[in-house]
Image (cartoon, rainbow, N blue to C red; front, top):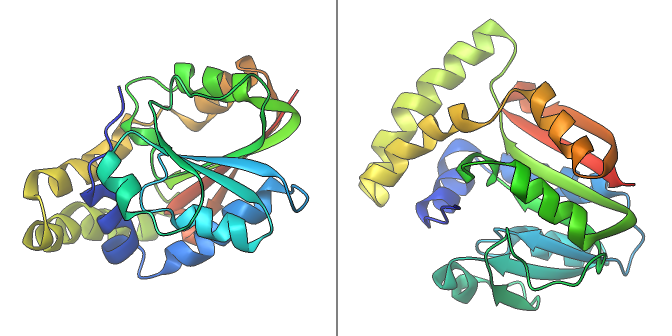
Length: 211
């Protein structure tokens, strides 16, 4: 089951990142390493920010989200469809790549999602998955924990659904251990699986190539 609560995007884009998300999205698109003209599905696409960056890089983005409200707010101009990202209306091996931003922690299980990525991405295609992380440096980790766990829910609650903003910091704990996550991607048919920390470790970028 996947949660596409709208405040998730507001929080990541307005409160936690202070526009660092622009650099993170560009890093995500660059990490695909695909030639211009590639068809890339952006999953849990929200308001279409990643689709904009994909289009700017010369790719052909496709926007998929379970929330019709998010799709209506998408101003990227990319073709879009309301869909469960565990059962996408896409033929086997039909896309060159996949991106997904700040959504992995909302899955009950990542295995079925990775399997679906393995189904729709062609051999040699690439995926780039961006999400939050726990900084390895203890000083950075402490400061991040205070801001992300205490300040963000208070400010976010003033702007939108208080319960949703309280949920977001807790949702980070739902991600599996990095090594287990990478192994599961390999089991789904991917190779050259890598995990890179960004901005001192407050976000992570997972990339892989379809075998």
